[in-house]
Image (tube, rainbow, N blue to C red; front, side):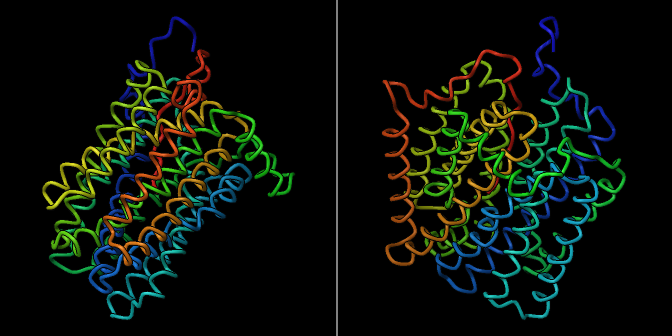
Length: 426
């Protein structure tokens, strides 16, 4: 973009005017609605079946721990093969695994070990799908609306996060958990024909190098840039110590706040509401305040709101605090990924994104399992507050140098390094 071009934020809705992008946006939104129905159903099923935060933590971990291995592999493969064929293969795998989960739930044969195994399969396929989908998304639109495309993609994910849990609670109330799983399986049929209609797309990578070499190139790019290292460390710390609030909401609501699936849905819905507001504001706020100030402020807000959330005595007061918590978490995580992708060389950007996903999702999976298990010993409130205190200690000690918080995240002045705010979901 030359100096006479208008700022990209002025064309926030620009990508939706393109028919192809509009189809991708709608299909991804429907698919993500199904994902949030499934997550509500899994959380309610585990909490009501076991009544233990340890099992709730393991169920959440099963979805995200696979990314430690599969995200770097998926990022390298997405830069290596035709993305259209790659995506179609992964989508069909997701359909088959989700269909098996649905069948077992309807037949009453869904034991916890089987559920965990199926969640691992779902986590593996989802982790390998999104690096290729995100890369393909930006290459389907002209350069002048790339920012609009990524911000809108982030917005649809958070909109689904806001609407999906409410639909999930209604479905569970009327038909039970199996019907929520069934609707999630059918939701993949929205994205399948759209991807089938895309042109074959050969990435920049020639595929002549071994897979491990391509992954190593992404690791080297992360290690070479202080801003990427800092944002990844910050994001992994919050994912391990703070983000488990997402996976532990069902057991917290049902066991500690004495509510039901409607209460679980309320908290997950308002978390999405906060994230939608933060996603809409992040790009403009980073332009105004700079990346470092925005991310540092979000990190401080995150530790405060998370501590207050776990101290709330009722579902209604917890919902008010969860709205602020969801906004702070999204603002910090999306800002960190924005800095990382802007500073990564274009040729390895997909691999850097996948490594970022691996670090964030893997840390979340480990954190929710550890804090969930600790919650069975000392209570989920106390265990989560310990995690919050540890995160605050890391940010205010490791992250502070020369009187400046997170100095490596100071935004560089080159226009080429400015990048859209991108969504991160454990």
